[in-house]
Image 1 (cartoon, rainbow, N blue to C red):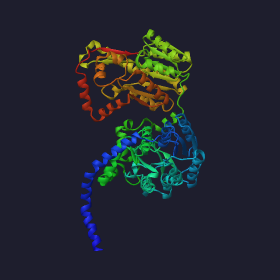
Image 2 (cartoon, rainbow, N blue to C red):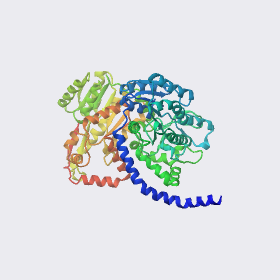
Image 3 (cartoon, rainbow, N blue to C red):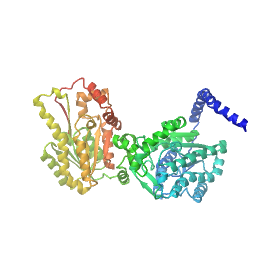
Image 4 (cartoon, one colour):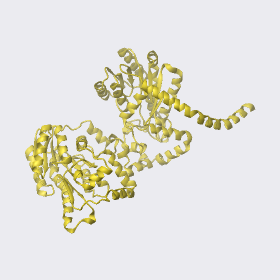
Length: 623
């Protein structure tokens, strides 16, 4: 016994430095060799055309998009899920994307008999099985000490772990025959100590350990790819959780925000593509997004620091809400979700977005009133609405130019387009153009407040006589939208219509933000009766940006301009869908972050851009 103890003491002293120096010598050639193998596997990647792929949890999220990715490559699919309606839609889309044959199996993988039936139906239909994708999973949120019924957590392990184990067990004989592959969706949570997810984390860690062991047992006969995603756009990151206190599935975006916090969420399409590419190459592991793998290094070398960070950010006092956690407050105070989350995950409007996206508005025959429609964004908005069959009321001051836009809109598909010469800075004109629209069409569905004037020039260069021009900017850009909205509200309430207001990314910086503030307040007042989409364009190709020396300099020296066609298509898509905000192009949101965190830097940047002063009084109108 003494000898054994001495051996252990010796190893305790020698093993750590020996391991460190061995790794220093071994890792460079090892990773060079792995890189060489990776290149070879990419060249000789598996062709899945005609192969049979079984995917569990295929009715939404990663499983759904894995089905689409395999379908694009010509694979025959077996799609498994519990929600038959959602699954049927995925089957139809997979067929449209190129899958020659798709079998739908409604089943609950937490039941062993269902798992056997899944595999049996696959073999009976196709006669073989090449890839098994274990994706089905649910998550839970809740502290263990606060659980009133601990047995509610069993559903997590039954689905996430045993569902994969059962299906794998029945699939093994068929995968051996085809020398097939197994894909298992574990999670980065398998090594991260994320609070309030203890059972979920354990289920994913069990998967990781289970399939690493199976890989050794199977040898080269059945290849296994273990996927450990970070935060990916799915039902889980949309806030669908199993609550520990009552065992019911709920949707809670605030709780989701507390868990995800300011962590970037990856797109589900990109994740699915990376997974299928990795499987076809025969990779053993995949972490998506790749940078999330860095957290494993922290886990290995600094576990105390990692745990301290999670406790500091996520843990609240016993009995208090998770929404009081610093992780949630950081998200609320910074608005980070607008940059780090995909559009479909934004809170608190996500639920209403999902409701709207299932019944996207049909613009055929709808009546759309657009101000500032003679050029620029307004002109191309008219063309975009026309392509979707909308009837148009086009308002601007330049009648001849407006008639040309109306003629082209009719040619693009608008069944009727009327011209309304008007100056929106005049109250009576705004009343008249709304009345003429309703008298002609009998209704109003969308109001697009686009008319605007740009004033470029240094304030100190203005003379007293030129100050009246500043008043006209407010009259057109702000009051023109307010007037038209005021007279349109009764008709928009009747049609449950929508308002689109073209603000500007300048509202984040030093320019007045009256439009944004006004319509945000109005949205709160109107509630769900009238949808309002606030658009903040960056530098868009138009008469405004083309005529202004200052903005032309900005466009050429710093900010690439966005095409008018691309911008207007995005605007109509978002208004069509009922989104609350749009920044176009999306990367311009970076300016908002600069404004919040580095205002001095932003101001200095604009000062440098404005060194060549634009003559005062240069006014450009987009109406």
